Image 1 (cartoon, rainbow, N blue to C red):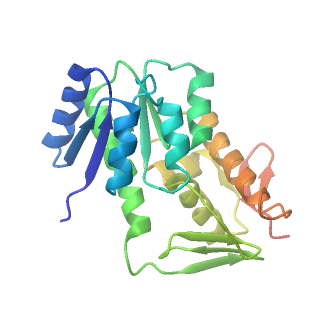
Image 2: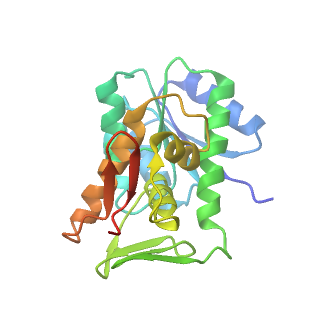
Length: 229
């Protein structure tokens, strides 16, 4: 089984060391980084399967790291931060983070969330799942991990890709937020609509930049579906 490579970005040496130990004990190959600037250097030189990221970093902030990475990388980014207010969580999800764990964190929860994110991400990257989904002029290629709208490519995060893939796989089905969350995040839904809503909003925003069509329809009181009427 191929070893997954994880970049741990945390300026507190004790916390960084703890996270690296948790992940190493879980069988992962880990590289520590202690500033946003160092993290950018490593992330540009090597392909990581996942990034664990603090927000309050010397040099480049966690938010800046996410924004820069999302221009060219799709690997999952899990934020661990003491900035755990609703506005902070929504902000990093809008930037392109895939999950948010507040500090102080539980060791087992960190490992479980990493496993869930990697499981979903590896499913997208695995060869042999090369089904191409189409809804109108929207096309999603599972094998190439590529989405185009009106012939123009759309850059999505792994979680956005998973949500869109699920919606396009059953274009007439209405998915609840719970169904979308449990499929895309691979974990139990805890009743927090903001995570799903933010990712749907990001999806719509990115698609609207390349096409004036409305691809995702809100079914009020229930959830979301593809707009195929």
